[in-house]
Image (cartoon, rainbow, N blue to C red; front, side, top):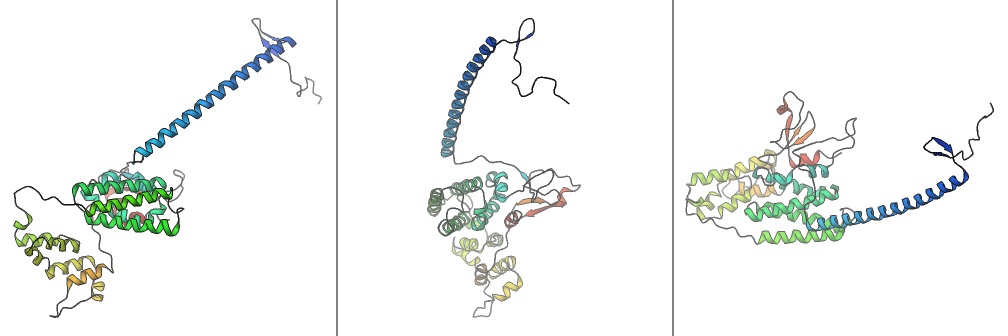
Length: 355
C-alpha cells in the first residue's frame, strides 16, 4: 500500500500558537524560533553548569564535614535493637543473610555492658571474636568492636571491678592483632594498617592503666569482710566459680588463707567444672594418700575449658528465628513463646552465623 502522506523522514512542518489558533510558521518565524531556542539552550547549559558546580561544592563540603565528624567522634552510628531476625538464606520476604558483624552492630551491646548481669557475657563474646572472628567483621563492625572495648575498659577503671578478665581480653586481642598484621598482611583487616597500629598502641595503653589501678578502700567504719564468722567466709568462697578468686580471697588475712585451703571446697570446684573422666586422668596424690584437689584444679584448668556460667544471656527463639535480650518482647507468633526460647552461650552466638 503506497504511503499517501508526507514522507516520515522529512523534518515536518513548524506550527506556531497564536491568539486565533495554530498556524504554520514562515521561514522568518522559523529563524526567530531557532535563535530563541539556541539562546534558551545556552542559558539552560549555563544554569546546569552552575547547578553541577554548586552540587559538587555541597558534596565536597558535606564530605569534609563528615570526615571531621568521624575524626572528632569515636562512636559510629549503629542500631540499638533489642532483637534481630537471624536468616541464613534468601526467601520471598527477605533477601540475603544475617552476618556476625551485622548482629554485633545491631544488638544493643553498649547498654549490655552497663548491666552487671550481662557484663561477663559480653566480655566473653569479645574474647571469642578477638581469637578467631575479627577478620570476618565488616569495617563498621570492627570499629564498633573497638569502641565497645574502650567502654568496657573505662567501666572497669571507674568501678575497679573485673580487672583480671579485661586484662586477659586485651592480651588475647593484642596477640591476635600481632599475628594478623605481621603474618597475614593488611588485606585481612579492613582499613589502613596505620589505623590498626594506632589501635594496638591504645590496647597497650589500656593494659598499663589497668596495671596501675589502685583499689580504693571504703571509708566507712562499719562491718568488713574479716568481721564475718568463718561459716559465712566459707559460704562466700563456695559461690566463687574461679579458683584464682579463691586464692585472692585467701590472701586478705591468715584466717581466710586457712579456709582457702579447704579440700572439700576445691573438690566441689573440680566436680563443677570438669567431668569424672577428666578428673580420673589428672589424679594427684599427696604423701598422706589424699587427693590434691587444689593442684588438680589448676592442672586441669590448663588442659580443659571451664564450665561457663552467666547471670543473663541472649535468647534465641526456635520458632521465629529471632535473637533477643531476655527483657525485650520479640514479635513471636507461637502459642507458647517461652517454650521456644533457648539461651545462647557466647560460642553459640558465633556458631549461629557460621554458614
